[in-house]
Length: 214
Image (cartoon, rainbow, N blue to C red; front, side, top):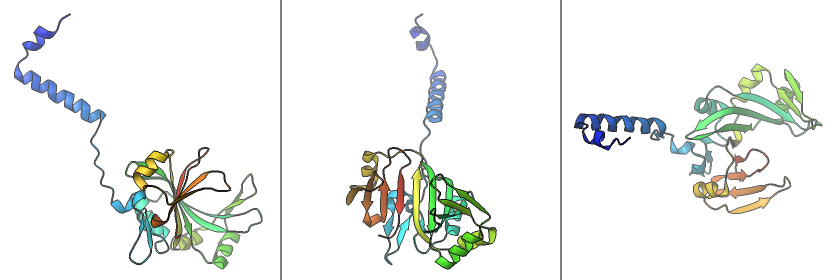
């Protein structure tokens, strides 16, 4: 059937209505981006400030605490203590399992700077201990310890994107790394000292962006 004669007879108001309908459908399928993310939250904008402090993902490493991160990323978080099989090398971390930064969806882990004596005490008084297949330990601290740890300074920040990173995308956003290494874990590590950033490209697992004082 030939519809051309029918379209020629349509009045102007009908063409306007059709055009408006088409535009509505297009905007529904491809909504315009209204990115109002503060620039300091974007991963590629990490830098050292005038005082020599590393600012990354909206946090100042060595100064800010998990409480500042909670204010930024919400109250969906976990506090855990970790150790090796022999209960050596203890660390404290705060983990945000689901965060959004602009179009980036992922997780954030904060490693905390805690005095060793205090860390040992929280570890020994933990309310639950999980042992991994390798024998390493994961301890859930009690509520009072969690409140104290929420006020401890952040030692490092790790962003784990849900989507794997490509070398092209990294170079477009972060530029060329100052150096690259394949370390004992067998995966490439890209270093950006001016951003306090180490990017771990893991083809068999999640990639990671680690921010710490070089």
